[in-house]
Image 1 (cartoon, rainbow, N blue to C red):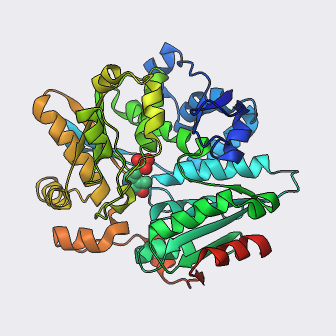
Image 2 (cartoon, rainbow, N blue to C red; image 1 turned 135 degrees about the horizontal axis):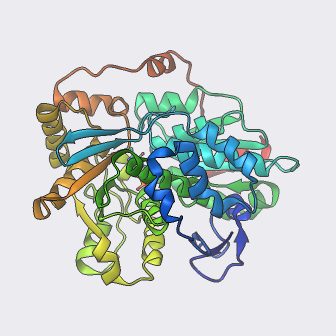
Length: 429
Ligand SMILES: *Cc1c(COP(=O)(O)O)cnc(C)c1O
């Protein structure tokens, strides 16, 4: 399958090139040339398929020109070695837990899949690929873990000093091997600006094959469609409402691809924190990006969600069609904490702040559609937001063994202040 740029002025490329480029030369996001629905009996008999088989059939059409079936099977075996349970909350509300992977964040699947694709593409290639990524917390850990030990790929992660949680910092800084953490004296925006500058720096790109690992990259974005199929397999209800806590809108957009593949969905809810560009768009039809505002659901502090153009493209920019399947609501930190307390007190469910935003979005929809059944996506393990969750529900949270082990490891990072130090690192190391 080929991929084209949504800005329409860059050449059409293979999956492999789309993964290596990350973003098209005209700065557009790549999009698959076609989406062929899966056969009806795939959905009729989905409960008889393993997660591995579901994922294989769902993603094969997008990657098969560049990854043969045997290799794809192997990649999926390695990527999908944990569970994605749907947990009942009440009669008509359930949580799809996506946090059982190695870094306890839903980004593990995409990061691992992308890492293995890039590793495969760099076999027999003498040019090392450098993955350069800025993180406000979760992306960095998932990327570091996913790419650890992948041959031919070097990973450089920039994170703002003192602004990620202790667990997140350990996940970034304790791995070694092909992973380097650069600790930036500044904010997440500073990290992101440095990364953007590096991608445009001729001296660097002439010498290094650079790529990014955020959800702009098709290999990180597309595998997220598996989650929706795994949920459907477990509940087998034909009109599920999915509520997705959204930041860059990659996850929800992947759900819409699952829908395009033929999976029945009643409604998608994009639940956001006060970074409400999309809820406002759905109300006013005006898309107005804004600087991001810091919240307790910080992985969703995004003022200009990059994947929203893909969503508009799926619906051919027809606002009416889009609004028939997408509802979007935003919530404050106070409301989010209140939801965490409610989930705990009424249902003994401990949610992280992101999942709680998803829960709120679903509840809001159910107010007007009380006969519906909905699933909200729980995108991070509550322990990753230990302080907030503990303070809010006034309860000690049990720390999983793999986290305790991690906390005992020694942090290794290189401290940098300005762009020249990043440049020097990329050119000389
Ligand atoms: C990244 C992230 C999100 C947002 O996902 P998008 O695909 O960017 O919309 C939500 N929750 C958590 C915990 C995340 O790490």
